[in-house]
Amino acid sequence: MSELEPIRPAVAVDYTTGLPALLFGNDPDRRLAAAAVLGAAGVRMVDALPLDEAEARLDGQVSLGLVWLELAAADGGPALEQLLPRLNQLAETRGTIVIASSPLHLVDHLAAALTGRSTEILIDPDDAQRAATLATSLSGALAETGVSDVGKDNAARLRQLSDEMGRIAATLARLSTGPGSPAVKPPTGDSRPPEVEVETVRAVIRARRLRARFFSEELFADPAWDMLLDLLQAEISQLRVPVSSLCIAAAVPATTALRWIKTMTEQGLFVRRADPHDGRRVFVELAPSASDAIRRYFGEVAKPVVV
Image (cartoon, rainbow, N blue to C red; front, side, top):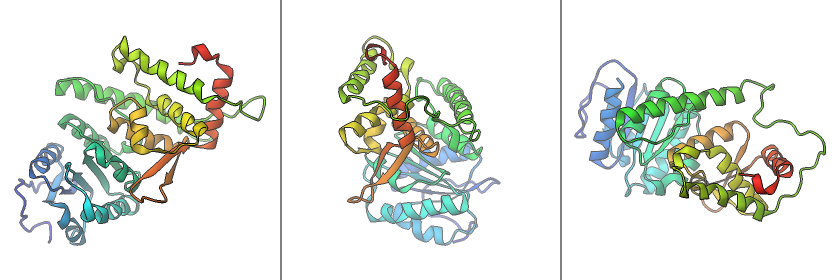
């Protein structure tokens, strides 16, 4: 099918100038919601189809800038299993933007399959979060974003998303400006990091969680540090941490946590390991340099004040 041929889904398609996009998903209502966001952003939606028609549709598409997956709770199975690797290949080899909007139970599957730099995963997003992600993806800022999902009305939420993306982008730019500004600073003094007791790390995590009993959680969102602590605890206990568990440990919305995991992996702080028993799941662990740095931190800070 060419871009000029009519389409079958009950979605209004606008053939105006803009980035050509395909929209896949089995739930018509969710496809409509995603289509509205794409249309508002000036994206030229070429087609909107169920998942089992996606492979054939991709075969017939010559020019493609963006693929949006709008997944529902019942989605999955062979159609999604076959589609995800192909979309990731498009992202890695052709720079196609791939955005997957999904319920939480599919997060491990999506995180294992969509690893390209121009891929993005949203977990149970609202329209404001869809719009913010699309805007940053189209502007080329996908690899340097992390947003906070707070606020109630859409206007206020979009302002908060924009402010937070700017803050995170500035932080990540400082971390990635070259060999002179590594994310992990080289050790000084003794070449061997100190031993850290797992109960010490757990006590710190408990203390951080306790703050939510007295203050709003949004005041203390610090997903990078919370994930570092969780992975250190797992490392000491010789446990594996899947992406879904690490998202919970981050204490922020799953979409935000996924962006931080992706960024910290790119910065060399985290390492992804495929589950040898389940190709739909990956584990995350500390890179050796990150493990060394956080152990040294615990060695220098007194136990009662490490929060």
